[in-house]
Length: 291
Image (cartoon, rainbow, N blue to C red; front, side):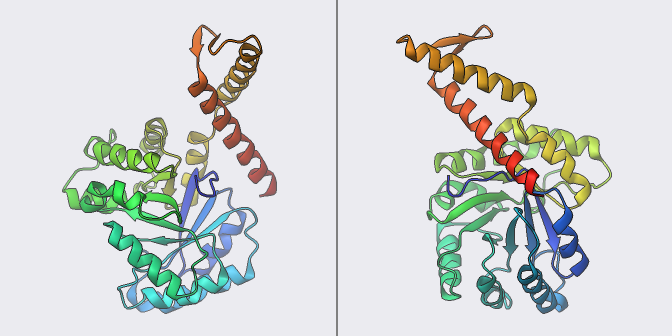
């Protein structure tokens, strides 16, 4: 995976509100997405861009990943967004409404023209075409750092209903997850709009975690603790991972290619999963020690 890192919660921060940008410096969040696009009114696009640049120049975000969601390059604001934010070297640029490999290449060309040939990109999958072409999108470039689901727009375009079980979205979520994993990419789930219903939100976090997602985009700081909890390895999982690795090492020394831990057969694939669990746990501990 390209520059893998924990992205349990990725908080959208409307860049038109300077105090929100400042508040991000104190939040226990893995990623801050400075949003120049959907949460910003047309008449405030220039202001939001200036605010985002000023916040990045001021810094102080510690180990948090800083991503800027720009307007599409074919809008009146997209290329100005790139020209302004690229010199500040954010960790990645998030491109919205990507629907094909051609869209990816066009976005990369616009980024390169702005001097950002060294910057990774993240891509939003938020339309039926994006879901249907997820594999070609995921494989379009080695510069893709993460795929981001845009489930609100997708739900709207599917004419679907929002349900606690998320049944209308399960095919789309699973299909995009398959595309991401086929190309070795992280992928995060979309937002949950009801900021008061934490019970259903927590269920949504755990559902996407169980599907295999790496994290979830969120709209409000109150949602961060739930996503951090859902996508962090549990103490029992960490302990079991260590037991698996120790038992595997012992079995290998004895010339065996399989072993048993707590009554379950353990093969090489389980050892790889255990090592990934411990890697994520160690990364989270290091990041949280710095925040």
